[in-house]
Image (cartoon, rainbow, N blue to C red; front, top):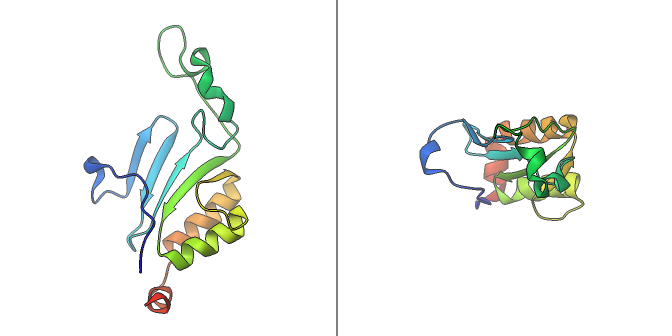
Length: 125
């Protein structure tokens, strides 16, 4: 069984929740799978074109502006068989990242990653 790796953070080893920037977070599940979610400027979300506008990202005082989105971009780490199934269903078979996911589709993927069973692991060996 191989896993596609997503970003590594030496400070979050063994942690389940980690925000890696203002509009992004990483979840690690007890079964070893993980998902990274972002809606930051430049991501495949409603905010794709906002990374070019520094005035949008920070206000006059230098504080980050709110950057809401109706959808997100994800990358994930899991066994190849599950990764291919997710990519086929949610990204027309294309490799990661997967963008413009609604909260409903994001939750479906989170549930798939969270509930991976021993049967799936045995199928891959």
